[in-house]
Length: 162
Image (cartoon, rainbow, N blue to C red; front, top):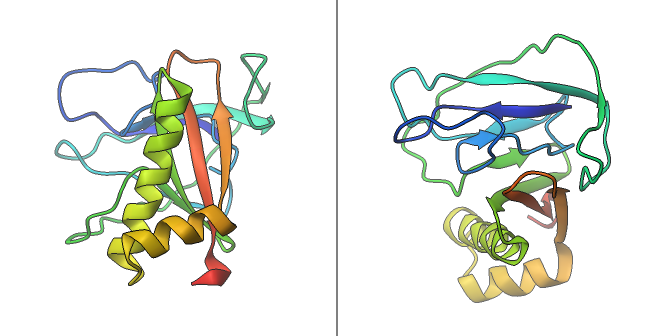
């Protein structure tokens, strides 16, 4: 999996080790072969960067590192225009995932859940109330990493329910 992957932020510079809306050091084990990571383009050219490859890493990354390895990553980059999504997001065959990072883990959870509510309400024809209830019944909240000053959380919603 790719631990650090992101694009340039809207304003100024940010170290690649900082996770946020631009991606960065999210250490999300779902950023792997077959997954689609959605990030917003904030500056011309986006300035995509990636690294910090892991052969294995559990959710939480509590020991500051996974099984770090050298490797190569092959990606396909597409620009999706005219779509407003709560980014970053990950899509795979089984799940739609929203991610959020904050120094306060509770805030990161709230942000990731709110992003999933927004996604379902704005893109899947559900009301916000229906989205919230469905997330409460069927989605899982997972902690990607807790070792950076900003902790990263993901909400996994089963695609089969849509």
